[in-house]
Length: 329
Image (cartoon, rainbow, N blue to C red):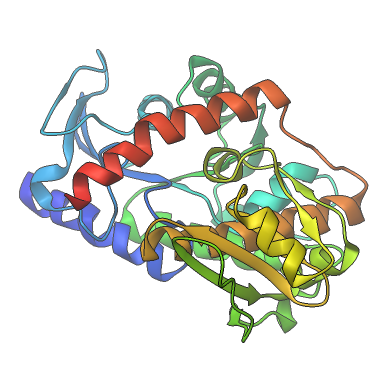
C-alpha cells in the first residue's frame, strides 16, 4: 500500500469510527505506519466528515517533526510510543468509545472477559491519568505499552488500540466495546435504545436546542442530582457539571447558562450554536451519564479535578471551537 492509499484509508477509517460510534465530532485520532521512521496521522481538531487525503499529516516518529496543512493530532505522542514499542504495529486508533471509557474509570480487576477475547485484544491494561496531549499522558501510556499490552485504557479519556493493520485495529475496537458493554453496572446496556427526541421545547433559549432521553440519561435525570465530569470530552465541551432540574421551567433557566441540563421525569435538554454541535452534545451527555451510573454502582466515582476541568474547558472554547468556526466560514 503506497502513501496515497494509506491517506485514503485514514480518511475512510475516520468515517467508519463515527458510524460505529467509537468517536464523535473531532475526538480521537488515527495513524498508520508509512516507513521505519514515519507515520501518517489525522490532523488536530478537524471533523472526520470533512477530512480529505491532503489533510492527513506526515509525522516523523523519531523527531516528532511534521509536514502538512494542519498540525498533527495532539495525541501524536501515544501513537509514536505504540510504533516504537511494537515493530509489527502498522495501524493505531485512539477512540472515545463510551462503554470502554466507563470501564476504564473503574479498573479491570472485575472485568468479565474470556482468555480468547483477551488474546484477540493483544492484552489490556490501564494507563494513569494525564491531561490530553501532555507528556504525562504519553509516558503513562508508553509504560503500559512496554509491558507488551496493545489495548490501553486511558483513565478519564478513552482507549488506544494497536493493530498489525486496519482490520485488526478496528476489530479490536469493536470487540472491546462489546466486552465493556456487558460489564456496565447499574444499567442494562442490552436494553439500551438510540437517543429519543421529546415533545418538550425550550422556547426561550437561543441557538439550537433539543430535549432527548436514553436509558442512562433518564436514570441520572430521575436521580435529581448533577452529573460531574469524569471524562475529558465532557470537561472540554460542557464543563464541570450537568445540572439537574425538577421542572421544564427550571431547566429552561439553567439552559441559558449551561449547554446541558437534566430534567426529572424527562431526560436532558441541550443547547448549542450549530446543529452539528447539538448532536455531539447529545452523544456526550449520554456518555457522561453512562459513566456516572456505572461508577456510582461500582462505588468508584472519579471526578476530574476542578483545575483540570477549567483548563480543558478554557482551551476548548478558545482553541477548538474557534477552529470549528474557521472551518464553517
